[in-house]
Length: 238
View (cartoon, rainbow, N blue to C red):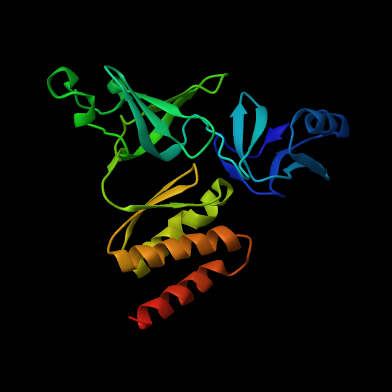
């Protein structure tokens, strides 16, 4: 078997995930890996998914509909509880909440004895974070100890189907860069189906509408041009 995908890669339906030398091997893989079908000597994905590849073992994690947490995902979450002296609990826009330990909340030392937990993160705060670990029982641990991960202050949240994450970013971030450029906003996009938009109210509204359009029409060809045209019209109406 030759694996054609990388661990953590977002896979679209019809994309080949592995190739094989004989029919027996491909049949065995087809029976083992859910969300696939056989096309010639290749095994292809039948669902929008995220690849888990470990030592030539492939698993496709269904991304359509409800967000399923996966180690290494970058997410946008909201603090929903503070459990002194060590833990913040975070809503990930999915059935499972996550925990952020104070040791993982910053690269710097956070003196909670002096200032308290809510001095650093409080109820309702929005964070751009990374999933550090997901246990077999779906206990989720987050980390903020990486450049770029931080509290997102101000701004507005927009929600989309997590399966459209790659489409909203676009190839080499082309779609999200276009939306930011045309609306003058700053946008962070989480793999859990949450986007954070900062800017003037009127511009946030335009960016949110653009994201909602990509979410609903992500399967259409020529979408980048359509979004560009839509945003140009909104600018001309100023």
